[in-house]
Length: 343
Image (cartoon, rainbow, N blue to C red):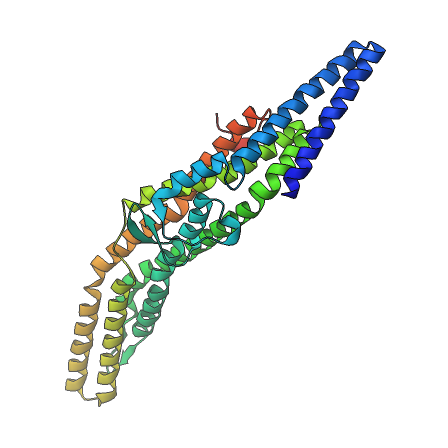
């Protein structure tokens, strides 16, 4: 690629410049000039070795790329965008976050994170809307009137909180997908050769090492942590899904239809009013009695989804930051993340 061609050309130029400075030092018999030229030659040869090693390691069939693809062989069942085809781990990480369909982890199929969120959030929103309409029904009699809002408030409140959490989680998952796309298009094709070029110059050597460490960490470490996350999360799968919610949606719709049907038949007689109150109360109690187990399953599902979509990616970022720091030291630089500085 063009970036690596430029890097190779700059290394060759700096070797020539170092040789010229060394020759001038000998011609002038100046010890400082000779020492500077010798150091530049050493660093230029080191840069040449680094460039050759990185090209060998991170090319499409390179050593590191092959190792990453081999480590990611335990996961499958995904299709890669063209810019990610060279890295199985990066491709899996993208599909695991925002892919369409199922991914295979250790031989078992699991929905992607975005599917896991949408599969529950959409029907849960429909259920919340239906229950809200049902709770808005008011029974008005000559002597007394009452509404159903108070009866449904304990059910609607946790469902609303769950929808809010799922909405925030959806944004987080989408952000991860965009970040992985950015990494695939910039880490190895752009950032790594830019780092190599900057490392060839005396004044930008440390900056070049830092950029190289960031590129390698984003390409090699960050997507591999998603493979680790998928294997960790696969052991704690939850069977809760849209079918559980759809059953309650049907039940709520039937309850609402029955209540409205009885209200239309109500003629205002006292006996009919008492019977209507008993009838509506029985329907509401029957509907709400099924929510205890439902809410428990919903809370377990949302909690597990938060772990998969939020806490495990944060763990991935921490591992990537640590790896970037250590790689920067190897490449002759230092990376300090301020308060995130990890010893």
